[in-house]
Length: 51
Image 1 (cartoon, rainbow, N blue to C red):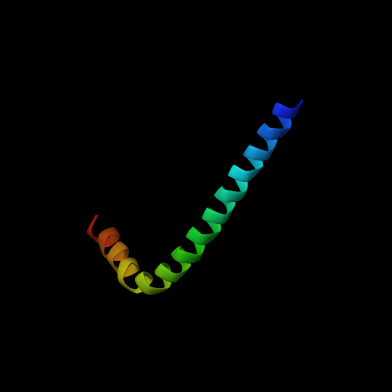
Image 2: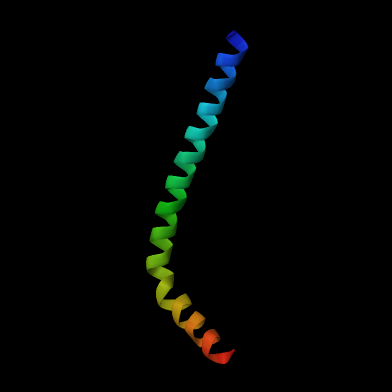
């Protein structure tokens, strides 16, 4: 019984770490996307026109 509860705690810790990492990544991506949309988006549009 103890081992099972310890496993659940470990899993929940891993999940919380993943969630916090995901949140930080989305925040970073938002910051970067605002800077790079101006550069990358026109390039993507240009590539679409080429093909």
